[in-house]
Length: 420
Ligand SMILES: [Fe+2]
Ligand SMILES: [Fe+2]
Ligand SMILES: [Fe+2]
Image (cartoon, rainbow, N blue to C red):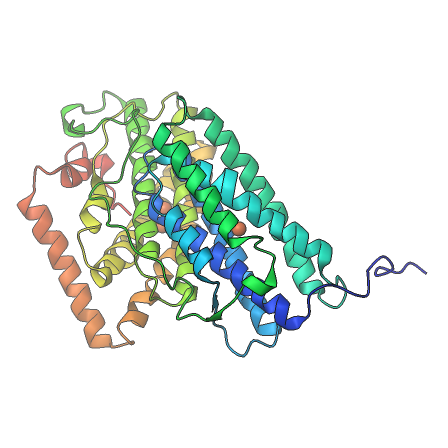
């Protein structure tokens, strides 16, 4: 009779304790790769790089989460990571200091991820595939994801126009040396040292850019109100352009929310990574619709927008303003867009707004992290709610000619939409 397990080896090189140490290291590395990429969203200007990072950091959040769950199976008593050792922490701190986009992409996709993928492959070849099939299986699936990520990251690196600057070359050499200082990621004797205070212990926080960076295609400093749309077609183009840019602002802000709060529970980071990826997909959806209409990124002026406003708020007010004000108030507009698109037979626009609206439901639910932050104190929550609304209203009143206000109210009434 067919035997599904006929080809499985009985023995393997790593016992439970050794496997747990390796899995703990994988969790730490994947979690930190996710967090650093999230922090770079607002800092690095290239639109396509933001899109790539958004997708990859979501995958890495799932990888890190799967490793953390596997730890518990491996007789590890609590859902707590291990500190992976100073050499690994040192590499990941260095990774956060990349001097620019090309340096960061080269460091991640030409140095760190290939070594991580090699460790996954080596571990899988050595482990007991039947006794430790859960790890063996995860190694295979995560390895496949990493290989695809490396291929995509290297393809993006090839499209950076000029030669790698000297600073970037030197930086990549330093990253390679820091990787070599760890040795193999799949060597259990150098892996876990002690229980860590959290998934991000030993990592620092770079200051937030006041404005989310955009590449050379984007034009700041012009008022959209000075160029009102000439007809319905131009208005549709403007709206798609505005929405693509605004969705990216949400992704960039979520990147900072994820990056700046290592003290938050692990599950907060998984939720935030997922929402960040959704917002990147929304940005690309509106970009593709813009292109479908015959436009392209850069056709209209952009504003510093919601990233610039919200980055100035503290964490509780920022959480409220994004998840419970912007996301929630924007939902009826998406339904309205879907219905008017259906009525005029615009299937792609109806479809994209239908799915974007569905995504917003969990995004609003992520507002639960504000309740968590406030220890479910309802009075404290109401205070944050009132203050956030008052701050917005005061800002809008005091800055009637500010682009963040003008962009949504200064054009024509039909353009009114509660932004995310
Ligand atoms: Fe990963
Ligand atoms: Fe969105
Ligand atoms: Fe959203």
